[in-house]
Image 1: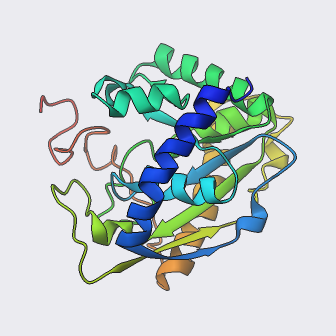
Image 2 (image 1 turned 90 degrees about the vertical axis):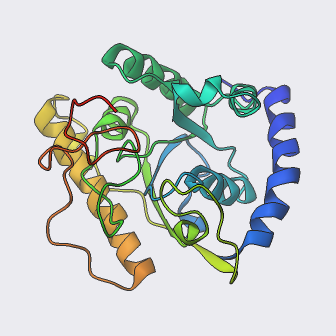
Image 3 (image 1 turned 45 degrees about the vertical axis):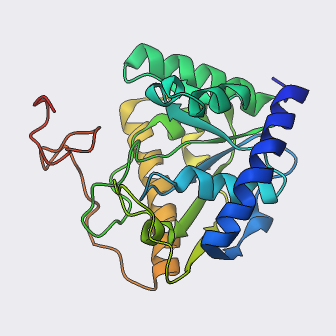
Length: 252
């Protein structure tokens, strides 16, 4: 899957609009771009603290000459204007079903094999951790990495949640905030590469990815992360939706 001219043109138009806005909203402290692979397809795994995270990560990657392709929830593709932009830039819709998720991973695999980058939020949704640390990850990124052999690059960011807090309804622009991004070295998954892709293997590889990501977030925050990673399932929280404090399975 090579990047068509129409997609590159749409990215250019969006960048012309969004980059000045992002630069006006937040100053930038970006580090670690040298860890982005240049000769092979790769998987980006960022932390997820606010709805504007994809713009922050997209801004960073685009400025570093990587066209950002996200696995994004399918409902976003049905929003006027937003959906059209997502489709035009070849973002990957994810349905909340096993079959839909598998189809999305197939599309992501094609992008990687073509030498591109694919962004997967390993937490699957905005963190439920009260202090916004990375929570327990899902196994999609690990599965794709083990199936393709693609390197997994953790990217931590911090600061966007001050502009647009989790599930907020307006921006907080003043005083001006700083968007800090830190890219880590590719996660070492070599010990899992030749193992059968079982639930145990996937969970161990996912833990390795989340550990690397959490370390980067801790470095950005200058704080020590909790000893135990937040697990929404153990706390009977919903995996999706704003009203995640409702008991799992209860209608919103």
